[in-house]
Length: 271
Image (cartoon, rainbow, N blue to C red):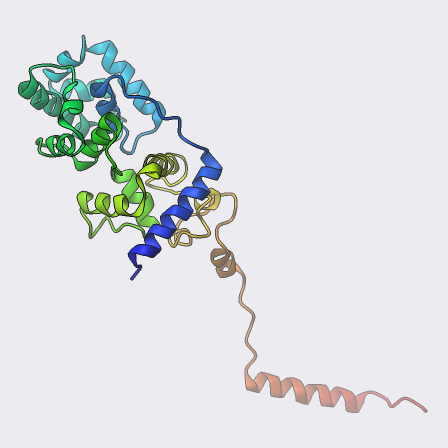
C-alpha cells in the first residue's frame, strides 16, 4: 500500500514533469462568478474548445443567465448539443444550482462570497442540492482564494492511474482532502491545471496515449494501456521482445553426440 508521503512525492514529481511539457498556467481574476461556475461544470470530460463553444451557444440562445436559470433542462441540453460530454447531467445541474442561489440571495450577481469568506463559501455551495464537491471547491478557490484542489472525473482518472487516488474506494471530498494535504497552497492551482491539461491532451477516457505522456515512466498504468508513437515504457518494450528458446538436456546431449561423430569422420590434418 502506497503511503501518503510517497503519494505526495509522486504528485510533486508529476507536477514538475507536466510543467516542463505544458508550462505555467496564466491565472486571471474571476470577473463573472456565474460564468466561471458554468465553465467548471461544463469542463468535466470536455475539451476547452468544447466548453467555449458551449458557452457561446448558451449566450446566443438565452437572453441572460437568469433566463438560463428558469429554462428547462431539455432546452439547455439541446443548446449544448447531442455530443457534448455528459450533457444531460450538466443540463440538469446548471439551472438547479442557479435557482437555489437566486432564491437565497434574490440576485444573479454573485458578490456574496467575498463577504462570506473562504470556509463559509465552500460550505454554502457544498450544501446545495445536486452540486458536486468539485464545483464548490472551484468557486471557493477561484473566487475567494481558498486552498482547494477540485476533483472531478478528469482529475480522479489521471491521479487514479498514477495510483495517487483510488476513485473506486474514495469519495470526492476524501480525494480533495488528500490532495489539499499533499500540495501546498501556492502550488495547488498549478498542479490542478496541469492535471486537467493532461486529462484533455493525452490521458483521455477511452484510449490514453501513454507512449506520448511525459509521466509514462512513473505511471503504473502506462504498461496496461495502448501505446502511442513513443512505444511505451521499458517494461512494455521488454514484454514485446521474443523470448529465447530454452534448450532441454536431451537436445543438448544429442548435439554433443552429433558433434563428436562429425569430428571422427573429418580427416586428420598432416603434421
